[in-house]
Structure formats: structure tokens, C-alpha cells
Image 1 (cartoon, rainbow, N blue to C red):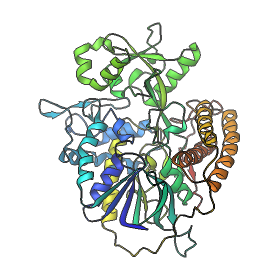
Image 2 (cartoon, rainbow, N blue to C red):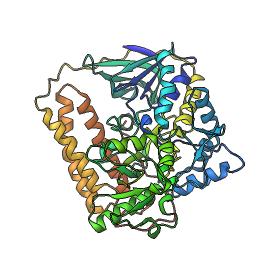
Image 3 (spheres, helix red, strand yellow):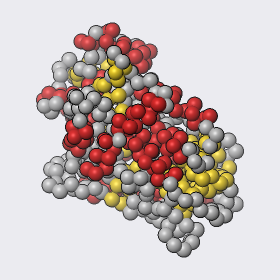
Image 4 (cartoon, rainbow, N blue to C red):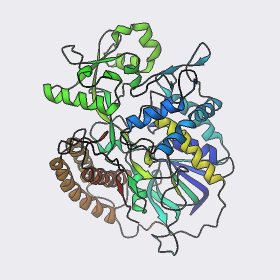
Length: 524
């Protein structure tokens, strides 16, 4: 049994922030299932939404934009808390060495869809990678942080699972060490889940391969409630190219004047929404989906050629270079784009300290549901939430008293054997992602959801058999989590008898007068 004061699972911005803060007075183990930089944070191009210029912007304006995008489901108290702590979050990152883009000495603020003001602090078009470049050396050098890469969360250890009396309390976790292929036991006073979202549920996603809903699934199995899992944000503009591997074309391209066109050059967004290309992501994604299905086309085109090559190379160097590598010169030709699963707005229910329903268990970042994002996330509020909630979680943990941890049982693998048919796992993985895309995508119907339920039941039975009889592997664990998260998404979608934000149902196209979150009780 390996004992630490705190276990942080996930090394994206939320996990990194929490670990660095907590390590001021605690011994922290930071577990990440691949290498340190393989999470979604490093892929973030846009930036961090924050009111940094009181003369041109205000907290009330940022709050209003967030509530409007969230379609009546944002928690106003939570939203105000995060918005008002945004400048502090940016200041902390600056102190960590993040070199945000500046113009004449001041922070350059860009504008993205859904924002009424320029308030997005960024590092050109590669903000996430720049933040990682500043924070990760500090993680590696910190004397109170033990970095454990290639450690995959298997399950949480709770008093309820061990049949111990009292309130359900998290005591630690089991993790698969992929180097030794052994499941190790970790114990701690607190566990922080910062495992990101579940974009790999879908066939097309902007997310990295690590986004398999591990934290959401494990917390739900431990007894935590999850909320609003039906609200999956599809980013409107993912590069459409056979070799692009879901490369994201930042919201900022539209924010700086990019327009969406059909193959014949016709601009179509003004006919869908008065805000045109600057409408929130759900509106733009549905408009693109509508036009693609109406015309039977594979993609639409994002055109910013009118801004000129110097402007494009200065503002979007990463996107420009990547497109050029694929034979697309975005300074002289439009970029082919399609919508793709991008962000999980729901997740593990937490309070403003990151606490879940299970004592000693916290969740921060995309894996959590704080109430900030409501039925649709406003652009660049996600990195903001990571820093603000990572800090709030750390503050709470640092002021908790330590307690003695009882001995925990080792992982029992005495009754299992090596899997003889690994092809079953890869086949099930492909089947899941395809039918979730077809049946539980941008536009939903009751019939499609029923088909998804039927297939999920069959998959769950097969995976349960595999999990019970064979040694666990990362592929098996990820598939198990994806199927459970998919089930939560489908159940949540079936429960919502309306269309709101990111959830659009042809059977219930109206929006109910009263906005209520969808809450599903955990298994614990």
C-alpha cells in the first residue's frame, strides 16, 4: 500500500493547479494514465475568459454572457464565484511564468462566440500548450509532488465498498501500473479527480485519446451523483481531413472575422441566427449539421482569407502551420470543417470547494459538474474553471486535519486469466463510438435513444464478463468507463423531455418554462 496525504488523478490544468497548490503543505501523488502532457488542456487553442479591463468590460457582462449561453441551467451563485475569481486565476498563471500575448504592454484580449466583449486572455492560438510549458516543470521539480505516469485509475476505494460503518468515505484507489502490468493500492486522506471529459464516447471528437470518462464512471460507481450528462458540446469547426486526427480550428478564427460557407461559397449562418458566426457553439454546430444533411455534403468551409496572410500568420500560427502541412493555405483558401464532440458539460456533482457526495473525494475540471456551464459552455470558460476550482479545492484540502488511514486490501487477481480475445475489446470500442455518434449526437430522437439503450445493454454484459474473468488492461478499463458514461448520457437524454442548449430532440423541440438539471444517483 502506497500512502500519500493527497492523490490527484489527472495532469491537465485542473489537476496541475490543485497539485501545485496542495503541495504547499501536503505530500501529493499526481497520477496520470499516460505521459504528463497527454490530457486535453494542452490542446486548448483559445484561452481563458476573464474581465481584465474594467473600462470596457464587467463581471456582470461576463456573468450575463455565461448565463445566456447556459440556456437557463447555469447556477448563478457558482457562475458569479468563478467569474469574479477569473482575474486572480490569470494573475496566478502570470506569476507561474505563462507569457500571455500582449499588445503595447497590455494583455491582448480576443473575442469568441457568445461573448459580448473582448475578454479572452490567450497565448497566440496555443494557450493550453503554453500553460503546460510553464506549469509542468514546476510539477516535476516540486519536492512534495510524486509524479506517477502510466498509472490508470481502476476504481476508488470507499468505506461503503469495504462494508465499514459510518458515512461513505473515500480512502484511496486502485491504479494499473502499465509498466509492471500490476494493479497497485494507493491510500490518502483525500482524492482529487481531475480526469477530464468523455469525448471518446463519440466517433468524431476534438479530444485526445485519454478522454474516456474515467473519473465520472469511477465516482458514479462509488456513489456520487452525476448531473447534466446529456449536454455534450460539439465544437462546430473541427478540421475535416483524413490525416488531421480531429484537429480543432479555434473559436477565435470566427471571433476575428472568419465566416462559414457552403461548397459553392454561400454564407449560411446569418439565415440561422442573427449573431451569425458569433452565435454560441450549439447554435453554430446545429446549423452546420443541418446544412450538411440538407445538401448531403461531407463538410462546410471556414473562410478568413479576407483578413490577409500577415494577420492570419500572426494570430493563428499553430493553425496556419498545421493546415499548411495538410496542403491547406488558410490565407488563400477556406478550411474544410465539421462539428465534433468537444466538451462534457455535465459530470460529477460538486460544491464550490470541489467536494463530491463521498467524503474525502473531490472533483475539478471537465470531470466535474459545478453548475457553471449549464446547458452549454461559453467559450474559454473551461480553462478558467480549471484554475479557479483547482485553487478552491486545494484551499479546502490544505485546511483539513489529517487522519490515520486504515490498511486497505490489495487488488485480488487470483481468480482471473489473460484475455484470449483482445479483438472483442477493439470491436466493442468501435461499435460504441459509432452508434453513439449516430443515435446520441447533435440531433436526437426517442427512437435513436432506444436503439442506443439496446446496444449498450449488450455491450455492458460482454464487458462485465471480461472484467470479471480476465486481467485488466487500459483498453478494457477505458471501454468499461466509456460504456458506463454512455449509459449516463443516454439516460439523461431520455429524461429531458424538451430541447435546451446542447440537447436537441426532434420529438420535444420546445423549451420548457422551468429549467431543471438532470441528476442521476450513483451506485454506491
